[in-house]
Length: 109
Figure: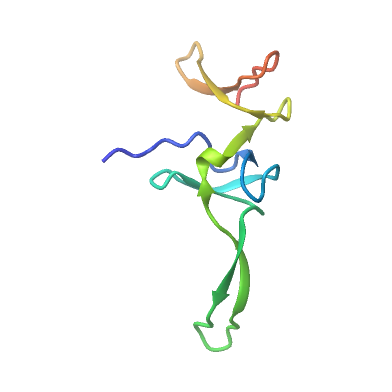
């Protein structure tokens, strides 16, 4: 069973390109490659009904981020600030880096 690759990593800044939160930016909190989903900070908020589990703990309605498909997000380049596709470049020392595909930018991250 092969593990699917996801184009974003935890800590990346992404923009949502489709759905109810289209256009919102946020930081990736969690990546689940097996499901092909990501959790983005402050986006795709859902209301959960939480039951108190211990004495003194309060229950009620809690807002939380729900996972969304990784195909619905695009990485934001830190240099040009645009949503970009990723390119890969191999440096002289043999390490592989991600690069911005926008013309004239080429920022590595």
